[in-house]
Image (tube, rainbow, N blue to C red):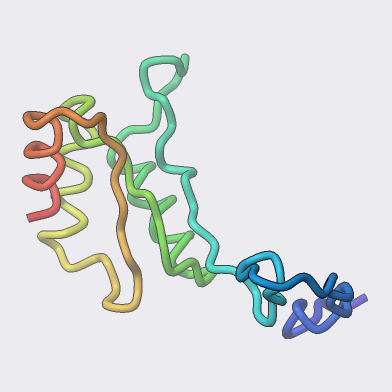
Length: 120
């Protein structure tokens, strides 16, 4: 058994219900979605053996190798481990130009500032 090169062609679109004055329910999905990996947001505070920067970097490299283009790299305001790891990804040029890194943070000015600092 081989994987389809383009799995979006496997199934036919379902028939649309013709209703006037509606936009998004009448749209048909014509291509695969963009996948976002959240695997690096590991909840370090809850793990018995949390990932360190080295493990996270290896994991990030694997996600890039398998072709993900949007990767949530972590939660930089949670502590030094994530902050330093994310800053290292940026400073060493490890994030390819076609990959969009994302971070998680609460909606507080100080935490948002810390998150931006990690990506600078």
